Length: 164
Image (cartoon, helix red, strand yellow):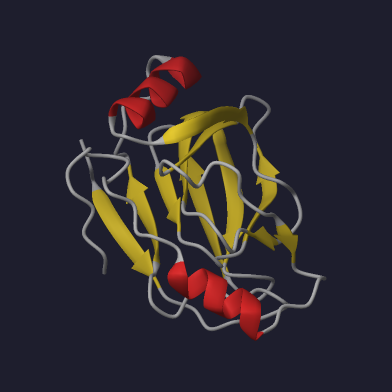
């Protein structure tokens, strides 16, 4: 089912540190979204990811310095920007999954009326911090980003996670 996986590396910009060690990943047409958000959440949970939710992506640039985040599109489509205000604009649709490492900025620019996305986190990372791009970050935040544990499993396959 997975058409492709795109890894994106970007430098810090616009108040978003991103992550020099881990790229963001876009898994295109990687998950079966025909069952809607409940099916996407079940898949993420089956693959060892926790703290699932269903909604959209915030419409402001933000990042989590203390968590990996899997974002699986359950319905509709959206234009997101990852990596900060000068980051990369991406179009996502039902069946796509975005894997956001700690420190990576993400923001929803526009969406179809039916756009629904499901989020999940590795165990122990569900109670994450949210930092907006207009807040400054320092060396302590960069150290925090660098020390977040890798996920044990890949959110799409459920197999052991392999870092890029």
